[in-house]
Image 1 (tube, rainbow, N blue to C red):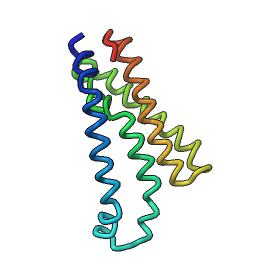
Image 2 (image 1 turned 30 degrees about the vertical axis):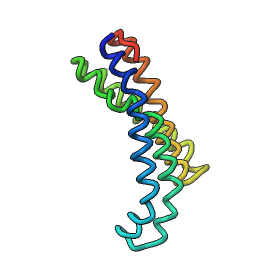
Image 3 (image 1 turned 30 degrees about the horizontal axis):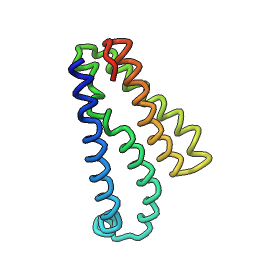
Length: 132
């Protein structure tokens, strides 16, 4: 119950912070690319970057709790949880890259962030009896 309250009370803050940081990154993206590479062709990466940022924002309230199984002394379940995320990302990359190229890879990762929320909620309920 305590963890549930912590998650709920901080969810809006975490979304707000990630939205602010992401917005700042998007605003300075062009300047960072020009500073780091001095090659305008890298600016074509803006769309995949935006897709990835959207995925991170969507899961930002849950990412701080990805280690919940490890903290609960369930390292096997921690490994299973992370493996499920990685497997979903690989599967989605295989599916989406041939269709959408680099944007497909970005979509695959963004969708994997959303899927991670599902896995986190389901596994934490089943394994730890904690509703997130």
